[in-house]
Length: 202
Image (tube, rainbow, N blue to C red; front, side, top):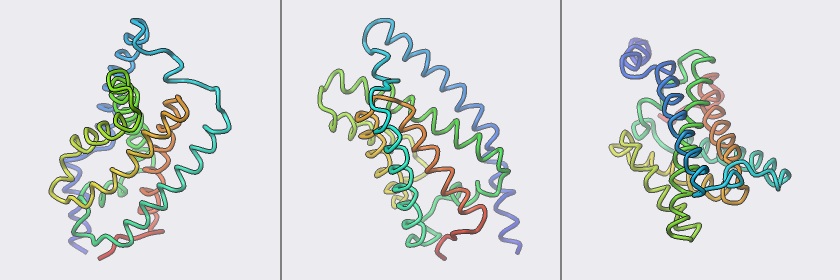
């Protein structure tokens, strides 16, 4: 009982969904401004970000990728012992539904605008090879998740989704697709934990 009570208190000092959502929102505005400047200077076009040429592929991409990555997350959770899972991942489901929603929404938006929208697109401009751009972007994505370096198995949990998000973005040319997949995947797995529909392996 005491162990369960200590976790939320400990993470309250280190992590707050409300504060994280504010930070993510601020950085997202900066990223959007950078993208706007790159469009103005003809590095990118609006079609690189918000193409609606393939609405069916976009919808199917969101549905299938969200479901597939959610299943992937559930399977990993069922097989990875608790000691190999990062503390934040085990605790933020204890926060309010609104706090979780805001954190997941702004976090997914920031990461997709930065990594897929800016970095992956710029790499494609210079390298001109889609999968090389996707792989390098994924390596950079792993690099910013320094909290996972102490528990490397967690890197699997973000490597596969990052590769799929990068691929689905190039397939649709619409940043909203990987953003929605990212958001729904993270929100789904967190709510499953929050309402005890799945549990971390002990």
